[in-house]
Length: 512
Image (cartoon, rainbow, N blue to C red; front, side, top):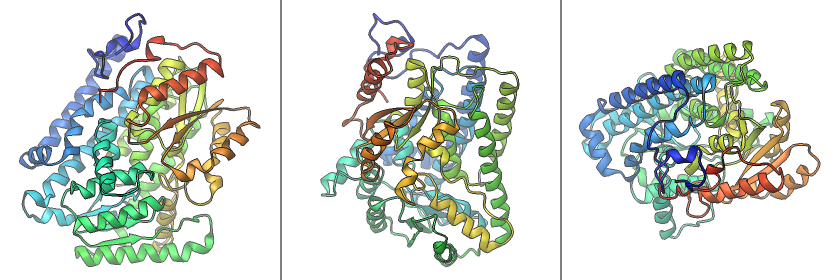
């Protein structure tokens, strides 16, 4: 993988791939801890097979995207590269509920898939289109809120950079425009290929976060073969005059689910879940106080991934989040009280903003290990942090609407252009001296503000490093292309030398 004249972390990998020859050595104590936690993940994967063994095996042969999940162990390990002590322990605790929930939902998909035989289990699922969180479904006892597109695109791309290009090609070959959001393009390709599992009693679509997503929803609707309803979420979410419409849309969605599932909405069950949602958000706010200090164990890849996960997949519905948060807060408090520098290689504190390269999930760990740039937080950390009122059902439903409006990929791409440039303010709050701006070449909304951002950068004391990506398509901008941009910025603008020269340039193009 690395130039053998350069000795360093890259020597651990098989040349031409990103597959490790052996586990990372972190010292005796941390290596043993990491191995034991790896065994826990192995147990989770084993439990996954027991959900529906025959159907899961059939699914591996039926769906192109499903096979990419065989790289899950590699993905998990790469998210922890270079971490030791409290930072390693926090990241490992964050991984557990992510792996538990992902494997459970994948198993549920296969268990209910009508391709492998009709069954009633499929009708217990309500499909939620991209960025719709599952709190509302918690008000329907016995129903399961299931992400529609995440596993066939976003999550799969985390595992395997060669997954999405196939679906993007399918989409383009059908004559659809190639210069729109890759997230939506990928889902369109999956639909055209008929690669979505045949599950769900109905689907809740939405108009977020952009026109590309709206067009994508219409295409997918034709392919799923189940009743659908667009939850038309207000984009100008700061305007209080839209609250009446937002509340009406929540109630309309409830009526639609009741009609097509035969399950009545339970106010009691919903309000109980609201409390769990609020606990998750309150815990996130508490974590931010640690993140602002130099003694935080939160950072690199897992911090923002964990937040995006519990917003999209939990919303109070995943019990493992409470368990993980309790352990995480204990580690954070101990590290802070003992004044432990949990990221000793840090030269710079940074916030990452914009749509990331999903084919290189572990980019933040590379920044830390190669250049000493610690990503304290990313754009996803600041999405959907809404405390939902608990005093009445109407106020709770309106609070949930606000949570949807400010969710992942929404808060900063809708509501007004000023929200896309909030990173300057957030960087100051978190005591950062650098902003890493993901320059996603397919996001027209973000690209339209590039000139404004560059002008603002001239007036700031915070360094702005722009790194290009194509979100789901590594063929356009490879991981090495991204590294080259960072290397050039750090050597010319910052005039610094790398911490590990073996990581500057290496061949991982054929790897996962």
